[in-house]
Image (cartoon, rainbow, N blue to C red; front, side, top):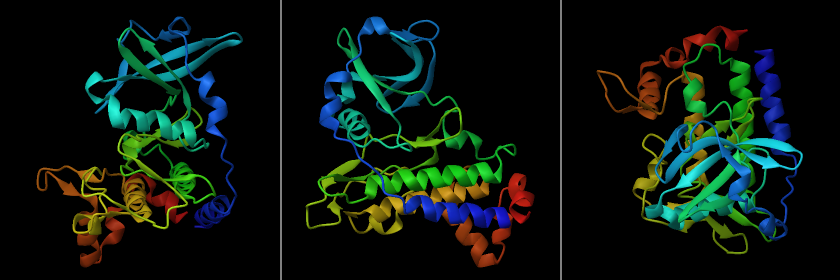
Length: 284
């Protein structure tokens, strides 16, 4: 329990730190990468590791004068270039932070376009939810990283935009080789200036993935930062329970995690939802 309290204390300290934003205009001319400097691992387009709605992601590297840098290369579907693809480029471009996936650049090949991101060698958080070797301490540190990144997107700094992610989920949390968490997946995100005298966006379209949707949003189309915070809370439960938000089993093929938690709370058996692989670590 002592170690858990220390991590919770660190969460508070990290969230209270000021975050510096950089002027994106100074970087615009440096992001286009020559095709000659791009190398795909394996055969061209032959090593796709993620299947996204708006494109495919490949492992590769960018050649610089002083060496190579491992990257993830997203090939954009021609049918979906706007507006989601623009958000995928624009938001990481404008909002640089250690817990937001880093934008390396972009390049074109014939009539196709690619966005180049920093390499997330450990892929996404959802792959480790039920991994007993994925320790409680590591899970908590990743949750701190996610909270930092989300706070940065929501923070109302003067002259900057507020970003509502709209699709916070464990598969959009990428992990680097040192297990630092990076928020990604900005295809459906919305941004609006902080000088607007409103704290919400009216949007009747539900873009959030099943199991992560803010319940009140179903009847009230006012999109606020709280929608993201609810989804983040679902991720916290995923990390604790070792289950995806949309949990599949033979009895309840599409049972969502929030319903499972409510059922256990009603039955007075909340401790039963904790992932067995980390129970002892939490108690210690």
